[in-house]
Length: 121
Image (cartoon, rainbow, N blue to C red; front, side):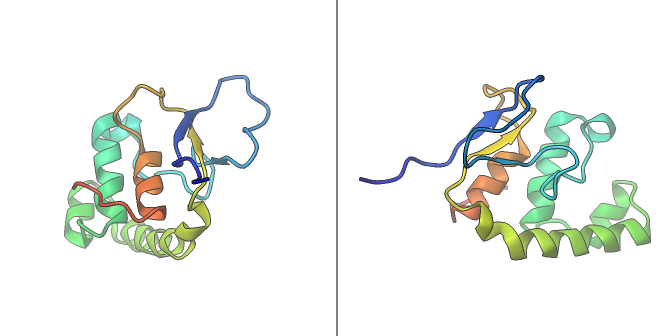
């Protein structure tokens, strides 16, 4: 019997534990997006995360987003760490704070990369 496709779950505000086998990818996790919704707006933050993680934006674009040289270097190190570990997310449900009905969530990018789906830029 085939395994169900991994999905994004919404973390309830008062949840103490994640569902069995699911991985939390929200704030303060190793998988958190470095692009704040407060700074960029929710949709733009998700789009920036996708572009950053897939390598579609580089040093110059990150500087235009307001990051300084040290922050840009840290973003590239974080990206490499996440890409080296992305296989650990394969086949797993991911949990974040985004509403389940939202079209915009960085967890969707992580699910797509971990499971080798094509990501639209």
